[in-house]
Image 1 (tube, helix red, strand yellow):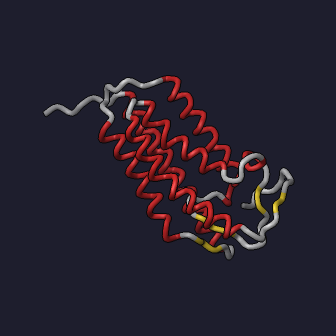
Image 2 (tube, one colour; image 1 turned 90 degrees about the vertical axis):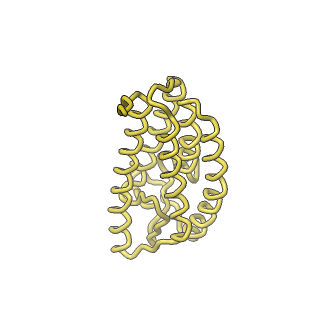
Length: 179
């Protein structure tokens, strides 16, 4: 049996997977450093559910989307724009960005970059990504499924994160990088 050719859909999905793996490496490094500085992690119990959702979402896309699936260029452009938002969030938080909820007591909250307008910009970006990427390939049911699974997890995570960050003051200066 001949191996199917690698089409644009799989190239796109491979690039997303590589991006996510690189981000996980950065997040692990930042988490280790923050914990060594005295930070604490909260909400660790729900973290595997997010990992499962995101890994499952990407694996399902790889399994379902054929190599010759049509690619919607407009939706792909929207997904690329969402990636710019993701990079903006990560760059704004700098060494404080993690995929977990890790908080360093006494560190001021970030209120610059996208955080000037939205309290949790990364969760908006992620919600968009989970819906838009499947739609790029016309797989609407994965967009719906991922969204339905993501909403309760994200709402729970926001409650946990807000609780962990309560009591910390906001620092609005452009030089702040604490989260």
